[in-house]
Image 1 (cartoon, rainbow, N blue to C red):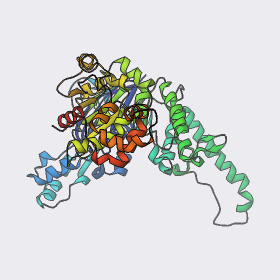
Image 2: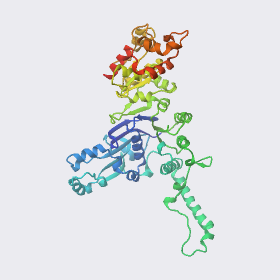
Image 3: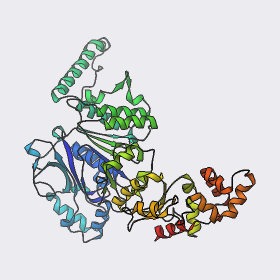
Length: 521
């Protein structure tokens, strides 16, 4: 099994530098918008394609890091300071001496392939003249695009070491993307000998069509006759399509196309793919089909998978330990969840839908115990800190089942997220809220609960600190239950009514005030 074990980027798109150690089976890339998930997949796609024409089609100006360009233009503009773009893929399982060597940024023996874009030496006088003019244009035209092995050998698309395909759900109806996918899958399922034979037979069939079918049409004609294209732009690889039930897949809906392309790419064949890149596979898929796709991905063998996603469902169901978190604020320093315990990773695989990625990507969070707390927390936050709000302070409020707090805290401990846990004392503050979390609390994690064991739940605390408001809203309809009992038996409904009618007047219990004060510090 051939895999990519490390990716190094320099001056590629938003990354001045990036080094990713990769899992040989599954890598789940997560992050906010513009965090660089798509850029990582694109870098892998470019370097494994070994296609200079693909880089030229994209344009160096679109893939070069803009900060390094601006920094160079704002400086002394010395030709020796011109930035270079680098993509390096360190490989494993490849037995080819041409790919083994020290022509890499580490300067040590390794197996791999690299793309380097750098100024061409012979153009030095022209580049100096351009730079001396002090205009804002960067001399991309004088850069060379070179694909090399770590053994310092040139590499071309026909000699690329791994078979791969990129499936981008955002481009699912794009004709070029569909044709590129089809060609990649055709190449992955055939040998070079088979492709040569297919191409020859296809050209021969075209000639036969011309000689037999078009003959009657051409006989009366003199100088000008009808023929069939046989150029490389009208070859078998440009004309071949993939069908399901004799229907071309590009005639299917977007969700079905996404599922078919991924499922087909995951099949195990003798000449199958080595690497599959999936860009946001959740797009266009219903919940049912997303579950089917996840099961298909989990069952995959002998392929290295890269999945870029915004979906907590996909990340948790596949395996949180395979997650790489890309940060908008610090793009060169991604976080990993590989040290998450097996038990916690398996818990999230089976747990109900959750907000794990929301928690993983935020800087501050308040974990609450149920729906009632979640409904009222924003109002209580505003009332506890007049003029502030959770959204404005960048604090995410996340509802967590009380028995799951420690699973979430293990996750946040790895990431260094500042987290306030807000929970009930359940009639024993010391045991449930102090001793229970002794191994989890620290500088970035605190547990907040009412210290009075008689105030055992959120509803009791809310009633006793807001008795007048609660009585005015709920007492008139009570026959047998007290207002406090009613709120305990109808937690969600009571919380929603309080928010809807009296949200701005509610007094936050003291432990929630302390939590707000701490999370804002």
